[in-house]
Length: 116
Image (cartoon, rainbow, N blue to C red):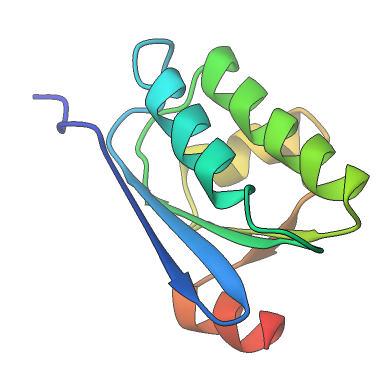
């Protein structure tokens, strides 16, 4: 059974944190995009940490949301950190050669420590 998709967002200085759980596909991507939009409303140079450790599957639409977030953050000279574990997301970033474009960490704590 596919896990239910869920997105949570909160602020943890100096970052906005978005935690995603469930398949990141064309039906779930709009919810993630909306949370990213709200997170990036913070004025200044945003720092966004996206915890994707609970995402077992990501399609091209979901990957597009990650790329849009990266482009928006770069435009404002901010920082995007993806929290990923070995699995689908890591493999997807590697085979698409996007692993060198995204900053990644293995845990939420590591990402927040890096951003501080």
